[in-house]
Image 1 (cartoon, rainbow, N blue to C red):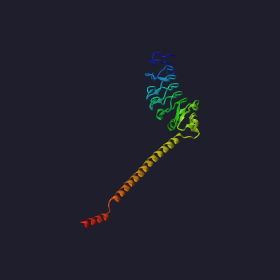
Image 2: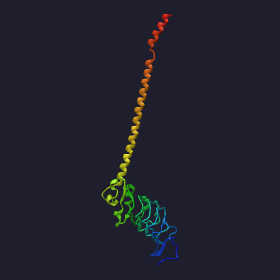
Image 3: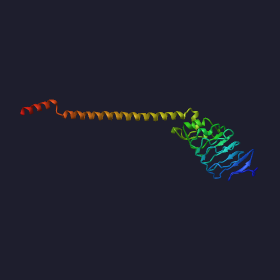
Image 4: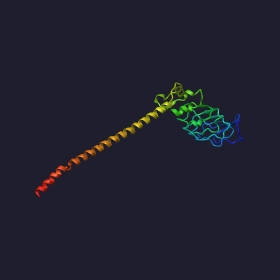
Length: 234
């Protein structure tokens, strides 16, 4: 049943199915359509050119249960992107985008089943913490892989398999931080030692010059002899 008595975003198609289903598939959209019907239960935005999900992008859609954002160009998601729909949302598809990381706060209180497959994820501590809080879709969970990693050996491998094997990316983060701190402290220590060596050598050189200067001065005995000689002559 096509709905005609309600506003529908331009370039989208709205229909009724226990609420409003808004279909905006393959419409070359580069942002979330404004003025979406408040009784929308399904919002289908796949195969567009959306690159960013801003804060409160769906705040008025209290009845939203299905959100499909797959096959876009999404690179970033704001921390408050899903505020207002978190508790009621049942399905969220973010597969086949350009996501490398997401803020943990973006999925706070989200109980939806989520698809994150086929994104160029960078595997490190913050991503690990995000994934452990989510209900990942079991059918595509092994397609959520490390495109790059804090440890190169894990690139190309499914993230869940890596975590299930006992790998903890947060440990690598701490080790990297410890190494960086050690290197920094070593550099500072080396600079202090170099300064002390320079200072000592500089002072030694000054002392040597001072001693040579003192040696070049006529002694008191020599001055006395010269004085006596001068007196005799007179």
